[in-house]
Image (cartoon, rainbow, N blue to C red; front, side, top):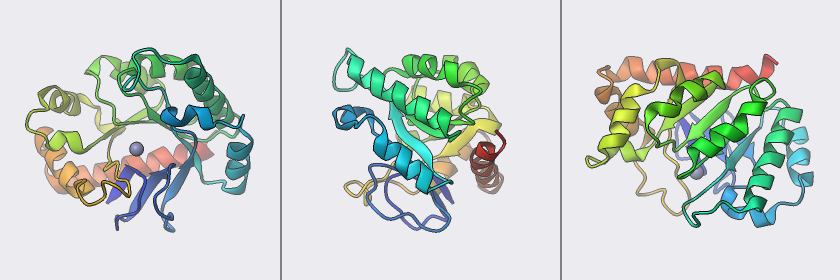
Length: 222
Ligand SMILES: [Zn+2]
């Protein structure tokens, strides 16, 4: 299956693999380069990002965004690094993968000016209530469902998962070298997601593959 957000290749047919990488990407995989919001202090002004995007025409930008997990106030420097990376993605007309822990509204707001300049947006780990879904759809956004869907206590998350429009839904493991053995497979995540949405596994898996292919295809339409 497609794993729409991972940092390590774990034998799926296709991976959207994001920095920080914990393995090499395979032939079917799409690489996303960028500085994670936790690492904003490492930003070099964009020289490296521009160079790697120029060297890999199929690559996107990610995971980039904002984060309120560690600090309630989003540092201005974190916002600036996010804005700079959106600007570079727009310059190269590349897709982005977004991180927005506890501040998805802010991430959506920051992306809106790039609506027609960035081909498609992937909202990874999106866990807010469904109120932002129309805005995400208007951005040509996709939402990937993660391991939290397997948690029987994640009642609100499961409600959100039911409300994601068919054409926007993906599945992701968010696996890293550190958690690779405990993260569930995307097939398990897809099976639960399909069940919650009242679908059989096979058609749901086909829908997700189709969405992933569409997400990738948009970059060449601009
Ligand atoms: Zn991740």
